[in-house]
Image (cartoon, rainbow, N blue to C red):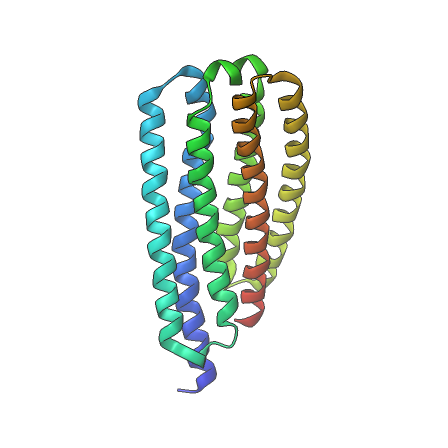
Length: 217
């Protein structure tokens, strides 16, 4: 078998692991969506269950990241752009870490603060947009081996979502500064909003990496 064929096979095997990784990240993000409402309703059991589910998924993502690291190491110099594969896997691992961090901080905010400031709706919308962005990543990676043109088109859609997140991030920040006066709560919510925005940026980096992979397959 030619080395070029071996390289393509190795890349497709790595992409399959990345697909498993993004699927789990998508599940974690979907768990996160319901958290602001749970905090407002003081649903302690629901919050605990959500935090545990997100933590479990983060561990699964880390294990997949280790798996792809081993597999890329095994093929050595066979994959020309192996650094891109590894950077993509590590960035996706970071996204899972952001979800865990955001969930923890959200769970420590008083429900009365979210409700009185009405910022719970802003947070929910921001998280929903990130879920949409991660879903697009899931669609991109599914298209890598079959429809490169479609993958590139989907990547452009992630850019549109990321720009909307930037806009809503600024709007939510203004609401926060005008409606929340308790310093501890303000700092916690500020960290959550910034975490969501930074996570969206990481998603865009993954989208760009996926396109590089699409062009090399």
